[in-house]
Image (cartoon, rainbow, N blue to C red; front, top):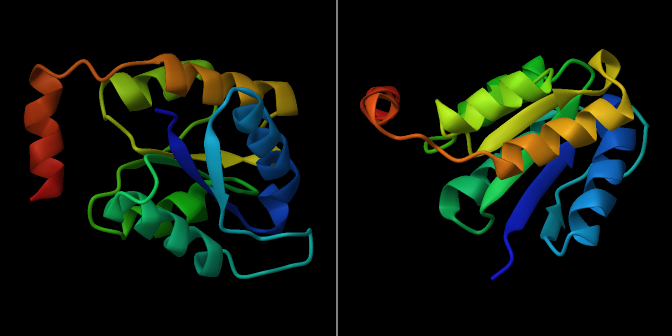
Length: 144
């Protein structure tokens, strides 16, 4: 069974969203694109929240959200119960987001990295596995 990804961005993350969508689909993943569909200025919560809600409801297995820095997008996603969204800026932060935090969504800043770094972050996050153990207790504390 192939995973389904919720993908969303504002105007400042649009270009990388499109690159990541193509990258995921080329690997056989399904992608549900929540927009936006251009570089025209938009309000990011209108796109990020529906994507996060789809992950929280189980309609999508994981999510990737994007903006200029990724910070605002992570804040919006983390307002949705059941979402653990981590801002990732390099492969180490992406690996730890999965291994230690079991992040089900990552947030990337298009203005903060190159396109190749963004794809490396996505691949690293996908390959990493939640370590459980001492981290499980902490995840439960987050969710209470």
